[in-house]
Image (tube, rainbow, N blue to C red):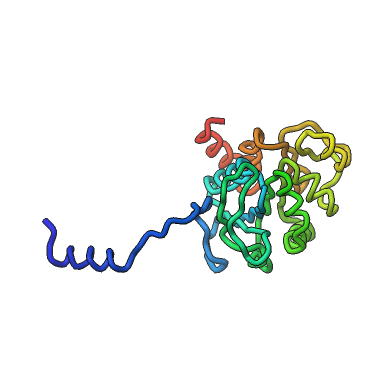
Length: 222
């Protein structure tokens, strides 16, 4: 039976809360830079207009299943967070890329998509973050067009990486290989939408180890 106190609580709740329709945020597990968790890894996923949505979703969802704090950052000018992806799906980033500067990231993972990858390539802020990852020996990765368009363009990947199997992209790479996922030291690359789930699991394995990867992969039926 509802008491007077119950009705008072419900009344206050109803008057102090409201739902405002908006684009759905892909990532609902964003924590502030001051969040502390002993085993939580911090992952940055930069996006732009025309980034590939399957790849973005696979990376963010899979790494969240591992237990990572996944933060999506928009590279659009003016701090704009809403990005229209390559197939028209609108995604809302957590932060503008400028807010990612000065934070510590265990992994920076780039989705592909064109011309989304070109927008990532042209973001000076993002490139500075990636170069810092390389200098500090921390993980970073890219899939689809981004290994060729972003990483290769800025000297962030060496010989034997992989990318989307198009001549126009492979020609930008040094001795690219025909593998779904390639790990070279602290750099991981992958082909495209069809390999995005495997890419996400491999990134999780690099962060959390083989046993955790086996557990997550089992839940994904792969």
